[in-house]
Image 1 (tube, rainbow, N blue to C red):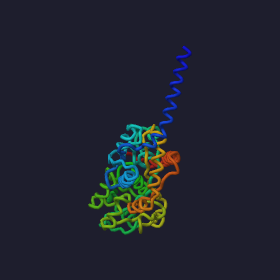
Image 2: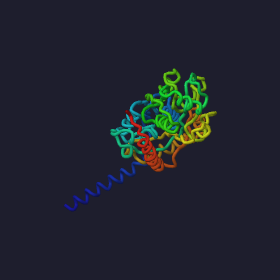
Image 3: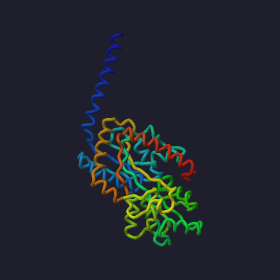
Image 4: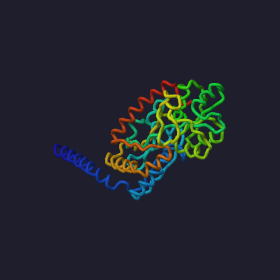
Length: 328
């Protein structure tokens, strides 16, 4: 009996040792097949831009196909659930952000996943200011003029955003609150459709992001009034910050990041972190991101990114609750 027990523990010890020894080897061979980057919004938004830039660079570096899979809906919860339920092997990754991991846990009463327990943080990818823009037919050339106009015509204007509970939606809620307005929110399933609505004149005001808003502004189809951060941003040239625009109490920006399913081997997480961080720091990538209103911003480590997300969940969760924001 003692020999059987001894053999059992010896076998367990060998299995543990073999498993531990295989992790570095796994990192060396990863990836051996295609990688999928799941984005919770349609093509044209910030996550799509990030995903496609990373797909090209990772494919070039690792000689494996990297596919961007757009799964819009439910404030990116559909995309998040898909990744949370995927195999923990580093081949299915989420391009998410403050909305998916800091806002949604407070916004939705019930999620089919746990943003803390079901994901392994990899790194933050980029920051971005939201952009306040109007259709050219709106007779306002500045944020001050629009606020005056909206106060004089209550109920006349609506604002479009990329969806309930998204950062542009929260920016719009805060804008209403700080400016003393009551502009009706019209949610869309992504930044692209929200921009299309405003370009068509169906909604007068847009709370948008750079990738979908800046090109339309350059084409004269939208007029940018300000960014939603207190200071101006180098990635939205010519747009004042809210301090200069006359509403300094409005100060909110957004961010994007990458997650793998919980349980993904740390060696794989570390390899992803190192390569993605190196890619995001390349001047050429930063220039491309800047043209889309994004500022590259990576974490010091996966652990540091996890701590950052926890802090953002506390701050943005409180904002959701304090403003009474709902998905209804």
